Amino acid sequence: MHRPAHLLFLLFAACTSAPVPIADRATDVQLAAEVRDIVRTLGPGVRAAVWSGPAGGQPTMAWNVETPMPCASAIKASYLVELFAARASALDAPLPGVAELFADSKHPALAHFTPAQRETARKALATASTRRIAEAMISGRGVDNLTYNIAANLVTAFCGGPLFLDRKLHARHPDWAGLAVRRYMLADRTANGDNEATARALAAVHGALAQRAVAGLSAATIDACRDVLASTADGQGRPVFRKGGALDSDPITRVEAGWREGPDGPVVFVVMLAQDGVAAGDRAATGQRLGAAARQIEARLARAQ
Image (cartoon, rainbow, N blue to C red; front, side):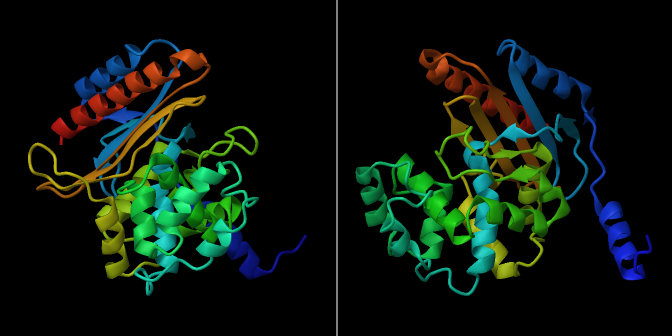
């Protein structure tokens, strides 16, 4: 069948623009061995993915970075980009539609929360600015954990729901195709599938912000995103930007992701751990062990920077 030349060009471009898969690698073999040993001590059945490397560059350590992993709230860093891209000129104005959303108890963004939980979130967020909702979604500052997650659901609903937010993220950059938005925060993780990400995709989100080079965003909007992600400086005084994630439902999930500013430029880190099939009574303790291990791996990566 004959295809018009412009269609052939688009097909060729689509094929050639697909990111080349990144295999496991490590410029520091000892560091890689130490990271694997930390994961090994967690016992059988723990899944792991790790990325470390200069923002926008190839990783100096990559382990399972193309493997989709549950990501919990770590995916919210990408939500932040889409929210601020859409509201760049109105970050300090209320987010449209929020009051109406809280009035609809059957909306899938809110239906899985109790009336009391929705009311607490409504009081905190119904008239809040876009910037304030972003702060609540990313850091949880000034709100409880449920409102922290409802804030992300307000953003997801504003972007059209999980499916449309997923499409927006994939259109932002080829490497962001490893992000998968399938549900609202704290909704059932099996009904429509879990929210997942590859370590490569999370590294691409943070790397673009670290380089101040996010497609479609102005410098001022990127700086606004960075302000929301800014964390406490590390022990060497290096600025740190991060968005992690934690869930103690099945599968137990812990993620540490972000970047550090250093004398040689920003270095991105992503540490993802998950364990399936943990008995309900053991999940909290398992989550604590995975969280401690993720932080230990991140610290080891930071020392190598």
